[in-house]
Image 1 (tube, rainbow, N blue to C red):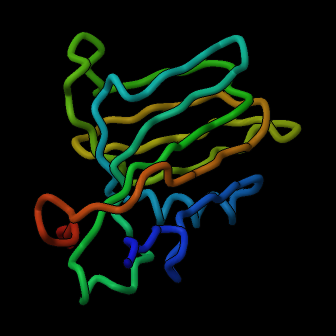
Image 2 (cartoon, rainbow, N blue to C red):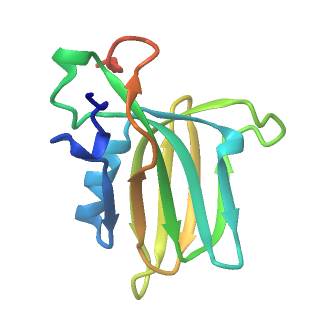
Length: 156
């Protein structure tokens, strides 16, 4: 009797990355580009100073797209040491609004502190005041076929 293969057995293992400096953050930003999420899937918890978003991440790193087509995976983006959160262009009253993440950047302040900027499509942004740069990106489900059946495209 044969068993289904497990995701972890494949050569394309789930991502579990951390960023403690700007160069690491650029990698996470590239891998999270074009992730989509609904507004209710983001949360800030002041007591542990943590901001998190459950993303539907496009698997840019996937080399098997020719075999199975474009894929997405549910991933958890976590920012630690968050002192405050501000946003623009993010509807606070409609938790079902779909948002699209374009990039993650860092604006350095003094003594390692600064702001992490999550740039969203449609001129939206989320600005996280942080005591230190600490971001993780972790895949939490198996990949699934992208509903659109194609990779995201950007206008030049």
